[in-house]
Image 1 (tube, rainbow, N blue to C red):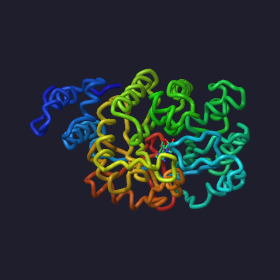
Image 2: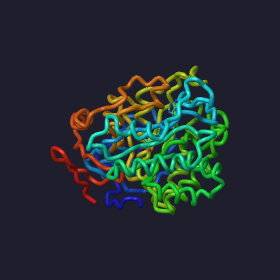
Image 3: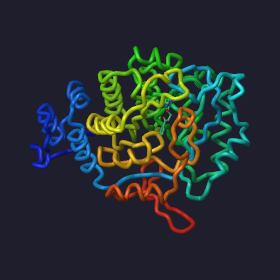
Length: 383
Ligand code: V47
């Protein structure tokens, strides 16, 4: 899936005060795959702008100025969770007064609130509830499909799928098939965190391990689902853990081609047991976007999730390798419980302004990256 490139020498515009970037630049211009040590060099280089320049080169080779966004709505049906991940400020134990679980009718009403004909995607994730059976989630999804037949349902992380399968005593494949029959169209990228067993055992030891996350994604892709992938960074991981994570995703993508978008997620420590850790800085976030673009040569898209990065950093990320800003979101809970101060949603107009002022061309997409064309009161999707 790597791109075919004719050039083999860095264009004259590439300049860096870090000589270690020169052989990497030559490989990037020749369309060659970067290896583990080169990944470490990109993380360790003092020349973040040159790393960003290279990532921008790849981004423009793939997408020109086109920058994607969508009109979506997040739905989090429950925050009750059997896991007690140190990274998380969202989950609550059963019986906690701050725990909530939506009745189905309530979840459908949530989907409808703030809904307009413009919404093309519901993004649904939640806690690992100890009592809700698979049928609750099947009914939730099929009820949404009945009420909003044109809306794409991107639902349940690999962690949730594996948990639902275990509780229902079904295989992962059988669970995925049941979810698809109910109306799930694709899967979001959450729950991947960082695959390193050492780090995972500290920040999310109740979750499936990295190999299981990757295997669940593999099975989903083999059944024809598209999905995204994430990486949580900026906590206790090191550069080796980050490169390892990215190369493991790249290897699965070589096998399946099922990942659409990679979304690096900066850790927000507030209200988590890790609240003594500092928040990531702007340059760390931008470097992470850039290294992701450079190492994940077989991922079509890199998303700068504005809710997490802030709109200002997400806009700059469009010049550091990102080609997607995510969407209108409408109501975000996971980051806001962890102290995010960004707005909970953004309008199409605001997203387009961020993109245009970055010198890029906004293209509204559906979840599968088909362009959406709108007239005053309807939209069509170019398939
Ligand atoms: O899985 C949880 C992360 C993820 C915190 O697929 C935290 O299009 C930072 O996956 N600080 C959920 N991160 C969000 C997610 C996502 C977001 C946008 C788009 C897509 C997509 C997926 O958020 C979780 C976890 O990795 N998370 N708590 C925290 N305190």
